[in-house]
Length: 83
Image (cartoon, rainbow, N blue to C red; front, top):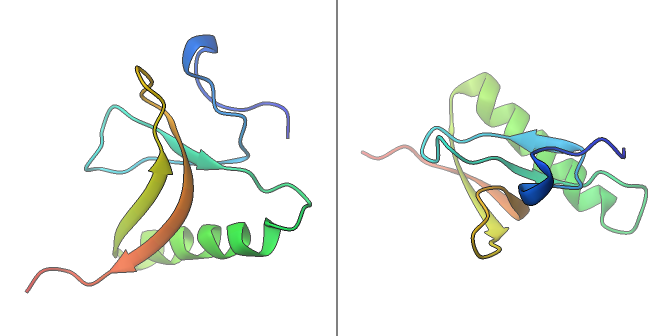
């Protein structure tokens, strides 16, 4: 906590950082603070770990700030691969 990610003009105040191969020049992240949102965010982290280990597709919903590459994620989902 307190280290964050990114340059000063595109900084994320987060503990969990992830990259998506479909968005190669961007980073996404979310906080893992000890607050009411922690259980949901721990679930997001578990989904990302499961997707990585099992080579699954992921969708991330995030808050985009104008002229920034990095973004804060608020929802993670594993998707089925295309048929």
